[in-house]
Length: 352
Image (cartoon, rainbow, N blue to C red):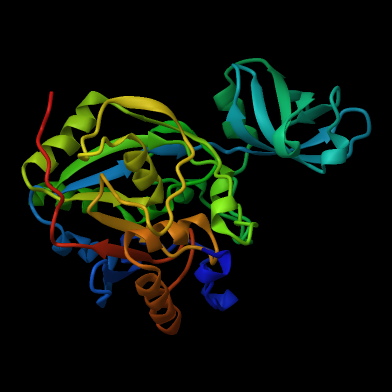
């Protein structure tokens, strides 16, 4: 299967640069995953597509302001550091630009010395391990000095950094937002609860690898990035109960999907679990855990468009994307949404 099988033409003006004032007023393209039938709506009407007993699964990760602009202590030269993964209390795996200024031993000062980082090693793909020195609480200093690590295709400055967070974001650790969740408001979530829709939460800390293009011609040669996930008993029980009672499991976003599919047993049962996943979902994959998917419109030739193609078919998805382009839908992180739906839930039994 070739990467070029997942390409489509996207005019640059359809890449959403700013979030809408009202999160839930995004447009919604509906796609029957089996027949390919397409419909058009507004996101706040998602309530009409869900039934009592269905279960919505949200990723409650919180994006950290992981982009730091500093200066090399020796020369004063500008250095940008992107926090990728916490290795120990004060040591992070980072992406440093320009890399040539960040040899082991180099010291970088941020915020007039409020935070100082020393490069201690060079690891995979040229990433740097940086040990930070500071007084006080790291997260509070990061909140003062850091910027949101917006995707490279967003060039506008984000005025309110909370707009790159879901309204239910809780567990800090992501370098990117689970953007399908950006469409939900507290009021919309309450409407769903009032209708009898169950809501479960899990955590997957999204890495920057989510934006990394697939460079290999054959997708089977692609190496996926690894991301940390966890789900507790309360939320696993909500999902398993919903399935046992005939409800559909509706993943909000590819991150919730990847987490559920990583931990689900063959019969779809969701155990209590935490760990790291590098699951790569592409056409031919047999889904165990989810029945429906709420997602955004993804980059051409990305692992995300491969995942949504696996959930339906490549032909159905590319046809839906063609319709979205023709209809001038907004694409990517701050863009519009797609609901990939089936009316027939998987079956399962609740187990303690």
